[in-house]
Amino acid sequence: MESTYLTLLSTVVFLPALGALVLAFFPREKTEAMKYFALGVTALVFLLTLIMALPSAGDWQFDAAVTDMQKVFSVGWIPSFNINYFMGLDGISFPLVLLTTFVTMLSMAASWPIEKHVKAYCILFLILETGVLGVFLALDFFLFYVFWEVMLLPMYFLIGVWGGPRREYAAIKFFLYTLLGGVFMLIAILMLYFSSDLKMLSKDQLVAAHVISPELSEGEQAARFAEIQAHTTPRRTFNILALQQLGQHTDAFNGDVLGKPLQWWAFLLLLIGFVIKVPSVPLHTWLPDAHVEAPTPISMILAGILLKLGGYGIIRICYPICPQAGYELAYFVCALGVVSMVYGAFAALAQKDFKRLVAYSSVSHMGYVVLGIGVWSAVAGNEFNADAWKMGMNGAMFQMVAHGIASPGMFFMVGVIYERVHHRNLDQFGGLFAKMPLYSGLAIGIFFAGLGLPGLCGFIGEVFVTLSVWSFNHTLAIITASVVVLTAAYILWTLQRVYLGPEYKGPHGDHLHPMTTRELAIALPLFVLAIAMGVYPQMVFHYMTPSVNQTVDDLAGWAQRNAANLPQMAAFDPTAPAPVAPALVQAEIQ
Image 1: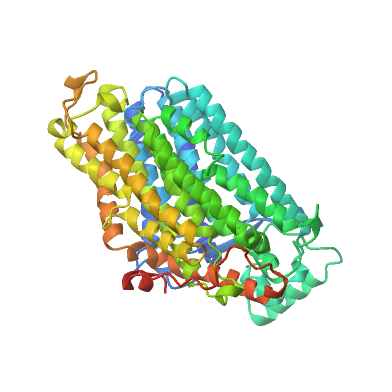
Image 2: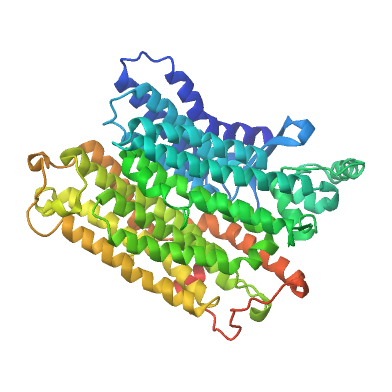
């Protein structure tokens, strides 16, 4: 069975890279054929992941009812350091994998205006997809880091070669910030690796971590366990699932380093690396520059997929491996989320560049993700009730997927009009609805999804996070709810300035022709999904909720077992009532 999963997941991850290799042999002048080939590769990868969501897919089917890792395989890669080619997926990674393949396909379709160095562009584009998919599927920390760094160079060149007038500055800034985050992450990885020891885990814990294959018989599992225990030296590991078991069930990462447990420093270093990618204030400044200079399809990838890598890393790695640090730094994480939400909204209000406004809106919306993850309300004063935190975590995950639909849509709509008039000055727009009614209608719908209008995808995640914060801290909950007003302000003001109001005042007004068939084929699926996810959020929760809830239950169980050694959160109000949610909301998090 593992060989089947090896073939499936390896095909999903490396098919784009194989396509990039084939593209290298295309004649340079066949630019149209290159674009169609790259689009075909991204469409095939999307179909492979979509098949896993279908109930009749057999061994390929993703079972939404299973909370643990699925499709897991492990092949020895660098045995001397116990590094394995180890992959799998669960309800946390699968929706993001599906989102990645979908947005990548649409972004490739949006790449038709690219005329310079088309072969290099398509090759880098496909390599970037391989890197992103590898991050979401890797279960070996070393492999995770390799894929994380693989993403860096393609994005650097895609911005630096095909971007706007200040593309070199934006690309170098992106490179330096991401490289810095990678260095912090590497330090944390090595800290955890040299503090790990598989001999500290029981047989059942090793099976849960897939160090010992669950498919082995009891006798084979016992023999494998005895073999691990027989080692005379510590058995180090990069296995993310094993590191989670060590962090939650042993004292492996609690050694003192400068007056704090080792896991406290590891958590902080990993958090910095991940929030740079989210990005959170004050490590967000690379994002507006990168978005403004990047071509439209790369902005779609950046907003729709790359920002989600940070949130995924926090959920998958920071909290499960370093729970004590996550508990102690809960207010710090929540503060990062709230500050990013407020600052991003105010910064968006101040912008006159259409694309920069959308970029700052991403800073604000991704703040909900960080806040929802950080709301550790399963504490002693709350009798370790994890319901509110489950609501926050599910809201954060849903927000990542919803933002992955709305934000690429907004950037694409900005790109459509930019291709016609070659400027993004909000003060020179106006009256586009009369000239381009279909385009304007789709754009308004997608921007309303970003606003968080009830009935559209942006509403669900935001309301879940806001409700969850109430049981954690009333002040933060009030601020979180108030950000909705700021979001409405900059979105509605933008719509009024661009699509309504007086006649268009900028240059190239005669180029404001209706959307092409290709543009409509990109915008319409995003528009439809924004509505579908808002009306029927279960289409996403169905896959993610079991795994998200299990993660929260594991962390709440750890807190309860270690309650005597944990400080009471000073600002937590144990008399705060549980969040009152509509019946639909309560049903979604069960």
